[in-house]
Length: 199
Image (cartoon, rainbow, N blue to C red; front, side, top):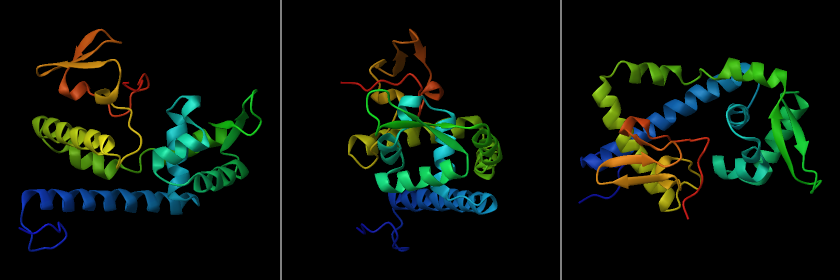
């Protein structure tokens, strides 16, 4: 049995899925790079402004962003310096530690978000053309893979239901104790604003 999924003689379904995910990742990178070139930004700078736009202030600091994007703190610091210099973000310093700060979008930064938020539309359009049951099955499989990769340490950050203290599962039924209601498979969030790590 061949173990290298990138060996084109390896015809196992798992190998084919790995290669398929790699190709989707490449498509995402191409779309992100194209948008970055148009705006004179780097891909990580675009990812940072999109993240800041939709997350709480306490997640918008150098340490968390480095974990979120699996890069070093100096890489994030450099990207923040450029974004700050271009007027897209501003720093909010801590009242207790002058070295610690969060980043927020300026009005110019919010305009950049509007220009960049649709860069993945070609991927979304492809998914929109699929039957809803195929979308549901794909989402269930991918969310399970993401959670497992997080549990094994490959992905350092996740804010999905499966790892949240409010989530529980009885037999095949998902339930959110914060909302106090059952969740369908399609209701599972990959990035929940109310996420709190399960202990």
